[in-house]
Length: 166
Image (cartoon, rainbow, N blue to C red; front, side, top):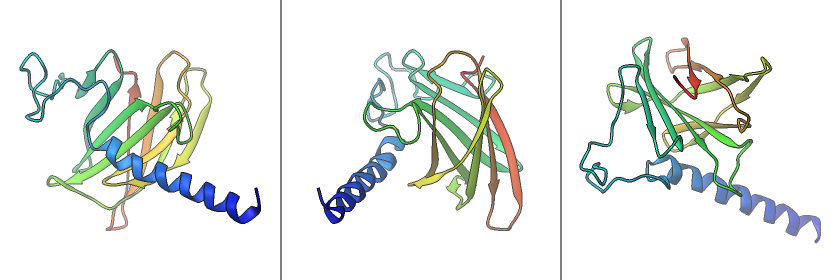
């Protein structure tokens, strides 16, 4: 394959992955058992937040923690990447920052400390209202997931969660 065709193929593949992210982040994940009204097949509400803010569903297929960080509502969402759609690792680490229920345009850096103590940092890419980075987290144990984000006013904010949670 010549260099031009190869470059176009890579660009088309990357674009398709970027377009898939917002759809995947939109909330209709495989393993969801909810109807359009936000009710599961048992009639329960979609949000099962416990007192620690965790939302788990489908035998660990989805992890969602919402935290208030310096007045911003931050959603931490971790899920196993679909086979063939991995974007940097086995799991997608996604963050959404909101103020008064509206997404805030932020720059987010992520850091994961793995159970063995090794740490790695990645910048996020924008996927709709979400920011995302891929990490390899197929190995067992608890991962510390941290973020540092800069808001339009120039201030920096940091926070984190553990995956999987307690």
